[in-house]
Length: 324
Image (tube, helix red, strand yellow):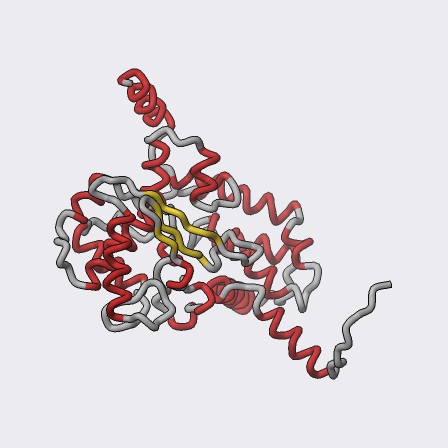
């Protein structure tokens, strides 16, 4: 038997303390806030209708019927996940009740009766990227270079805006998710950096973001190197990769305010970068499994980001092949 290294034992209090920290890190701060909101919704419902808090199939089915009159059935389904997560320590059978036939059929029936078409923000096009970047001269300010670098990196890297900028709420910011400058590698035709953690990274190992030069008006390599030169001149000792002129990490609102000066319509949001990049790759004939890998999707849910009707995509790709 291999010899074990000598380790000092911990007290019961230390073990309980460390376990509490580990359990507290299971959920992201944003997920925890959403789950708390769902629980408060359920508790308010029970109090208003004089129901016991015990989440029986009967109570959960009544909750579904009531809430589906006020919000989308899909949102109610998400609420149920949060309710199960929050109440499970007190009511261990809550997940069994959630899967009860009365509950699932009630939700299915409400979805059928009150289904609402999903509306999503439109994707940004490459033509719009070229138009936006053409408005910034080489002598642009540091914040302008930062905006263009984030815009093109997010589009071509199929990145979420939350991976490039901090949340507006202080309570949701996590420094462990901030990309570091010392992970950057630049070659003649590519650049890369480490994304420390993201939504689909269940092992928390991070992912290497690698982008290739396009040699076009929306070239991410040129924009990134221009920004990086300005950043290294102003903040040579700061570890963060993305920094504004005042030394702060750009926020979601900071980026969207600038984006909407160029694209003022309300159909553009943070997801427009990721959706635009995925759609552009699909239009270029890139296979779905490669788009899924580039965007670091854990499943085929990436298909909802491709905002073109399959019939239109087929016609575009067919005409392109005939032209060549």
